[in-house]
Image (cartoon, rainbow, N blue to C red):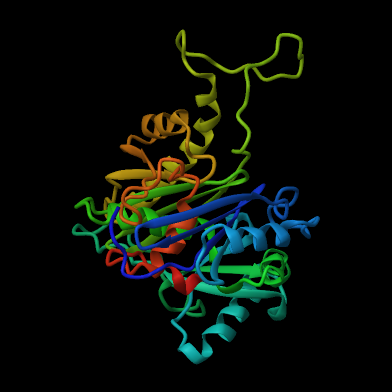
Length: 353
């Protein structure tokens, strides 16, 4: 395992039914998963902890081998409001207020209700051949500036997750979007490969986030709603309302059928970026997230999208990752730890935190 120059913060990743804690200290990885119901019934807004989480956290922190109390926190992607906007870059002193005002316009919320962040998207390359159809004339009254991924989280939702941590005497210093943190972990490995554009999909129970990156910069973001947490089963013989699943060949896995809709959506995103970006096509598609560790998903994505598809790996953050930890499930926590491990190939998504 590679020797690290420092110790990461405790990464706290809130999932739909669990919370994952991970810390990298030198050659040692400490990781614990606890039951958590904050985002179980309402993955968008969350619900108060029914009790017991802060006590479990305090017990684990005191006796689980963790160092320090400072932590970075990731919320499910479904808890964030997102949109692509064309706005100018704000000066640091005006950034918080400017993004909050933009969130008010885009999401219909009050400024005091949300905390907002943004990431500048890399511009598409200039086509080498003039397009057959001239681009549309820009609206003189439209806002000018680079395209940015605007993110906002309701403060009430954030506090539902932060309050048990504070009661456990932890000190949160950073709040992150689960998929963007996972992208950072994947990029720590894939940026070492001379592959140009790379696509990523982070699959959570009710939302899949599709991202594309090139040369350490984010190119594209798309949130795809769905039900990805519970695999469909074959129609029961005695259930008249069951939907039959097509099996193309004897022995084919019926579970692959449920991923085809997601793969079709991702293919449309890839084609959009290709048309808009002078032929940009990814050399690889990386899958991460709590629902991504299935062979059927990888096979379906590669078959429909026509892009070599791989499951997430922890290489580049922790080499090797302990065998007891699934890199797909722990991708977000690994991405948060990568910030503190001084990764030279880090895709910096912290300005959205």
